Image (cartoon, rainbow, N blue to C red; front, side, top):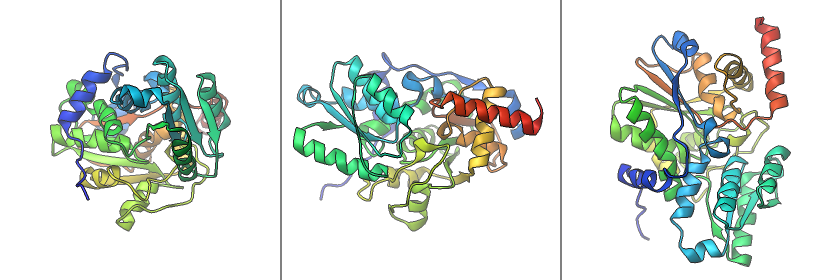
Length: 330
């Protein structure tokens, strides 16, 4: 069996050259509020301001641009908990490539409708991302579609790693990096680049406590399946794939520690981001903020928190902000 070749920083630099004409270079801003909590500078990498509201456009675009004309002509398919599907649908429309998105029936309806509004064919199947993946494999066999995987893909990982290139261009002295952790595409790319730039940097993966698939897999020493559960961080739901090729080993190699945050901690972080930092942050994007505010991140020096997305339902977010004010005073 051919040995797996893992992405390097040179591959990420190539991805940056490929996608930079299209994706946004997102801001890296200091949060004075959170710097006071941390005791040093805290910076937020605002991928909630990226195309389609999340970091996913980076990896999906790098993958799509690496495909042959024949692969594009046959059409694209993705399986997703929401944000990857949205990015793929958006890019497919922009590049005039037909797109099919497979989602589990647990994915919130507002995410599904957003993909349909972008012209994607949306197929809801099963009760987990893993079941949606199996449906996608059926459609590939039946229709010859080309897969744009959400995380465990060489080109996708390289695209996500461009976030770290931007961080280090602006803040080469970053000491601690907190990154949302789910399937591992974001963490793998970002942490690999960070360690290449500064081997001493502390890289932390943050997930929600109700269903942290990558964390449970790391604890088991191999990819494992865990049941999905309702969470404010719904975009972090889904397994890592029992046949995982890249992200499990890359995460294991570059992870200095992991943190799990509760639903209450995520809710407070989402509300705080809106009320004080004036940022719309979805639950999956707020887990790093939640970990810091709960005192679950340690380490001296400047801290960078990757805010991975901002596709929150506004009615839910406003309710969280209202509840925060009622509890803490406005």
